[in-house]
Length: 434
Image (tube, rainbow, N blue to C red; front, side, top):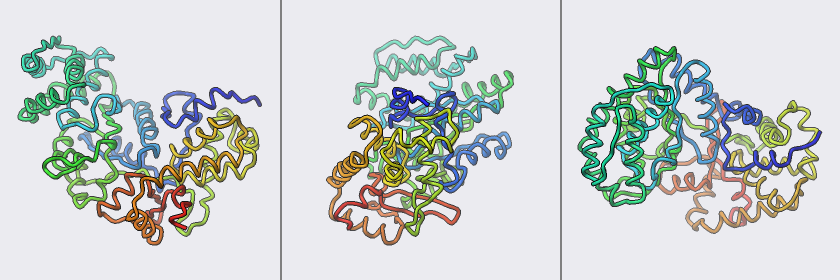
């Protein structure tokens, strides 16, 4: 059959996030739960739909950047929507400066996105507290902020626009808002979330769910207090993030699970529940042997982008349209380490070099280039840590080990027997580890 090359190239772009609500994106979606240690998204969903007993839940979701969290969260959004929930999903990186963010920024971003979604449903609330607050902020910023009773999102947007490009102005505004955090949180609950839930249920909805994506990308910088920014936001201020009167799912940095206060994080922000981790797709088993199912599904991930309308078995018969030999596709899947964005990244770089079918020599050149780029940033101490990980298949809580995870030098995998860690396969081929 003919291959739509433009559609294939677009589908292989590593920055593209699949939204399964979209019919075409749904054709590209592959369910990797069988080689990721469990049905993580189903667990998040069931907690909201079956276990909440009409009480708000706060769930935490993490994993390596680029491992497919956004795609899975959009799948969660779609499935909850089909069950009658009103789901507000947003990428925090579009509304917040993740290198410079405070608790009030996150709360106000949630309020803005929720109010914006309600306005689209013609649900008009009267947030009296915020009308007065914005008048005060307007005086403080010396910029009038006019807001009608039904335009909460617009008012917050005006403040965000005013302070976006001015760190100094943001700092001044935070100093003004910080003493009012409890009042802001109370107003969000009483004037926005509680009333929104009532109105949504009158419309036949099950309730309100907010999914805050990309908070795992918050900068790990150390603050003047000695705490890192993620520790301050998710641990020190976790109880406030856990106080919203609706179901919330937050993404958070994977490194927090390896800090000494991971139990504090679980209780303050997670309500006593462990954060859900989306591990890598197993391409190899702990003993180093090939994970047949993982490799098969990774192949299908590539082939589905080329032949979305064909059954899986028929796609396998058309590998020759994309690769010079089946072994080249196998090599691509193995070297990705089961990291979704890495897999598409290698493929995309090969497509930049040549038209399909992709030659094995082109892929090997791409792998060597990537290995060299990664190796340049690794210190002698890091190489030693990597050797220890290769032997023990574990990662400890020290800061040095956390850096291996943040830099994606080491990946985490899970199956029914538990979890293990392995070196990024690209680095495993570096001469320093031979």
